Image 1 (tube, rainbow, N blue to C red):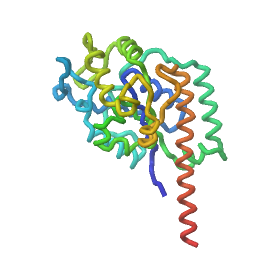
Image 2: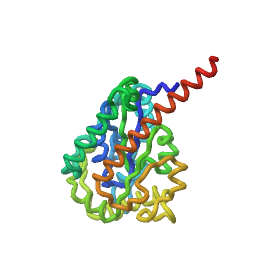
Image 3: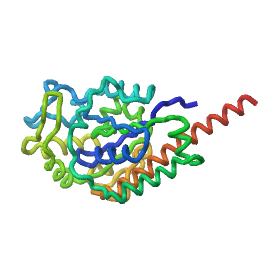
Image 4: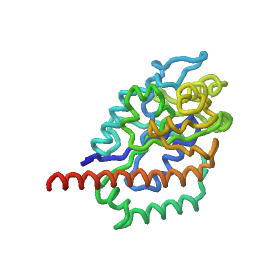
Length: 272
């Protein structure tokens, strides 16, 4: 039987697609939940490469993939936040919440009902003490992280879409980012020269004809087990995305319960 201590959910997409906002919203709705950030695994600034004459924080080479893998393995084995990870991302602000209080309250009521005795959520999260880890990151399904076997450690894989224009607008509103060395603010032209080209190159394989502002390739998504709002288009309202993600997470967690029950029946049949 699956003896996992945590259910790990990947939330990926371009920079400023809403990954961290969604992760924090889901953490507030589901019990026994914590957030891990890909950004917590940045290498020291002195080890980062350059692109177009600018320091490149938005490529796989900037991430310590072995350390990320080690952290995910710890979470699966122990169900706790890795004690060797010092989160810098949680020190960054993400602005006002784009989801209404009414939508958040409705989600909490929905999840609370799902967690009551006799309901699927009770057996999954209460009876088994399973914890949920939400891993947000801009490269989780990229070829480089696939080579590092990161996707194999994810139990559910959500992918958020955003247009170049919206991503640029959102990123430019940010003050900057806390780093190991102090603080980083995007230099002029950083999104156009580094962020978006890196995103497009790393995710072209998920889209028809490689157009990251076009249609997702359904066959590729199914092959990789990636879940996305395929028919919703770009720049979906975060409230819509939040409701979708709540439903997806409950459904995927129920799959864990179904798997356990199926394995239990199989063991009983072998005993007979």
